[in-house]
Image (cartoon, rainbow, N blue to C red; front, side, top):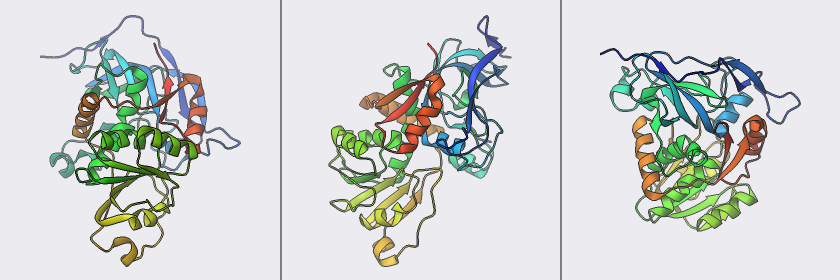
Length: 350
């Protein structure tokens, strides 16, 4: 049976959106972002279009805006923590109905036929595409996405609360799994922004001891309020040896100190898509005693489904700071400071 395209009546032909003009420092003399008017996109085969209700502001958006990540799409609209209402479907798209509230994440598409996709590791697909990097994202009034890569949003979460779950939450969950923390173990979190504060809740809700190491005094205070056992500077050693640790800060200099703080057999997971250079390591001090160092690359759809189910069951609630749609540049500057309380979210639609 052929599934026809559908759309709500009276969709506009133009929309407001942010786009990266010339990548560069968000706090520099020349703004890398512009607030523009552009055509409303049309969903292609197997795609849906949503009216964006909220979009989280992720550190990866900052990397795209400032040029830490190579340009994949000229004048791209950033944003990949998107909560929206389905207002149109393309041909052969039948998973969602008009009016459904769905989430559009970072992982936009994978090929489905490479060795990684066929072995359940689609996050390593060499042909993968990403929302807000390879294709226009959610700093806009409307956005399209392949329906197979979108998520249903648990009813308990409002739009602002749900947005950070779609990347900060999902990536944090994958990093948490990659860190191999034992039941009741001690977990260190380096950096304490959107992803780390959600990961901390997952760990503590499951009886684990969390130690936070981050540069921001406000972030350290927030970590203790959430229930962290300790909160110290990013280059400090933790007060106890850790079974596992995750580095969310994009700072390679922290790696040796984090490895030094691990107990024998411990695992350090690097959660970011971008990291500055890692200094040389001393085998005895940093690697010996069967310590493990691993990276985290994106996520697969199973991670997303598992995490959203877990977040619903545990009632994981991100701490959010809402920003008006036309203040996206201000939100990115706040994220760059690195001393934030939870996650920033753009409020875009009603």
